[in-house]
Image (cartoon, rainbow, N blue to C red):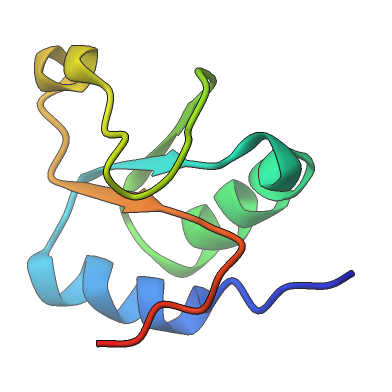
Length: 84
């Protein structure tokens, strides 16, 4: 199954926030897409894009250790549509 990972929306947000260091967090089922997303975001922005390799069980599962990385933006991916 292909998911719409909303890359253009992420690019727009990175640029709007002038984020220089971005962390991408994927649930296990979407981790196979991580490198492709990282490469595309690197190509479309000036930000350094990091991948979080630990487990992720939803948007509320932000890793405590991330504070030490001093990232400007965290993007957490999921399988469900997020409405806001």
